[in-house]
Amino acid sequence: MIKIVIIGSGNVAQHVITAFEKNETVSLVQVYARQENTKISGIDTYRMVYDLASLREADLYILAVSDDAIAAVSEQLPFINRLVVHTSGTASITAINDKNRRGVFYPLQTFTKNKPVDFSQIPICLEAENSTDFRVIDTVAKSISESVYPINSAQRKALHVAAVFVNNFTNHLFQIGEEICREHQVPFEVLKPLIKETVAKINDLSPMQAQTGPAKRNDQTTIQSHLHYLTDDNQKNIYKILTQSILENGKKL
Amino acid sequence: MIKIVIIGSGNVAQHVITAFEKNETVSLVQVYARQENTKISGIDTYRMVYDLASLREADLYILAVSDDAIAAVSEQLPFINRLVVHTSGTASITAINDKNRRGVFYPLQTFTKNKPVDFSQIPICLEAENSTDFRVIDTVAKSISESVYPINSAQRKALHVAAVFVNNFTNHLFQIGEEICREHQVPFEVLKPLIKETVAKINDLSPMQAQTGPAKRNDQTTIQSHLHYLTDDNQKNIYKILTQSILENGKKL
Image (cartoon, rainbow over all chains, first blue to last red; front, top):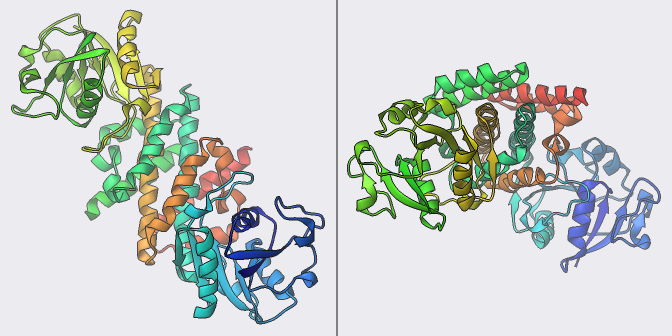
């Protein structure tokens, strides 16, 4: 079994710990939390540590800490030449102090506290500095997920930026949709099946092929009528910019 | 059984016809298509008509034609004082010629040709000029869908504008995500579980509560690094506008 230590007790740490606990490939040796007395569900007291000096030997140390803390925490580790990975979508592999062998173990998902996730469906993006280390994290990743990808730091950055568009910005459009509904006393529920279908479509079609709507058709009558209808300047502005972007797309075809 | 005639043979007409054909509440008397010899799957030749003058008597005429054609086609109908509804999200109920009793039967979904849909999950928005007519279309709608809403023309317009945000614009963000992935040789597949979770979240949380990401955290380091990373001016511009909009939101709280 691959011996693992998790350093951190936040959202990502909690979800990774749960996934490792039902696992025959890895043995979760210890969990480090900065705050004394932090409890983690499923982790007995004797495996919790609150002092980096008490960390035991392991095959892999997973730094599930905030991006800002990676450099400092990895510098404070009381050992050298072991395999240490972070879980960040944005930090470079070089954020980890180079006294240890370095890698990245990035589960690409939006984690909500206390909301269980099915880790087998979460893509894990891996990076290591040599093939031996890569094989270790690859084995660990494949023990909890069906989708494991080798992704270097430049690619991971692209993924993170793309994720902002498809997750954060998409959610913000849902919020605008909800605001428009609320303003006109329509239940937002009415739109949820449409939202589900929007996502279901891209299983079969590319987003370019799946595009519909007034901007796609260059239906200026509807576009102008919508702009006239919107009362909020910010919503109007977003409507204009995204409509223009879809129109420009049409010209590329 | 409620006798229905469908006028139109496009996407919406096709899907509504399929839903009505497996139905005990309604009897689909005829389907009108403008183009002679149009065939509709499941509709035998004797129920197809290509001339408005050949329309038979029915309890409900569903005009599943393009928005632009509603006024002209409804004017050409060779009868008066019957119940005629359109299926448009944008057209007013008054787009239908007033020689007949008018209504709206708007299934709020994005229909793709040849992709079967589960009509029971599609919200249908109804409007009529009197309660007797409303009851007819309500019975018909409930025979094919579990989500039926009375929605007046002003509310329907709000829904349509909101739908542009949550469906058309969301899909466009997926496309930008795909472009960023392609530019950096990352498979777009990696992002699909994240997209699914983005949508799954709003079953439990409001979009405002579900919001995450650098803009939500006002993480200017990440925001500036993403803006620096994006090479396409249009993508940069959309990133700025949506980030700003999420930041403004934070101030409202």
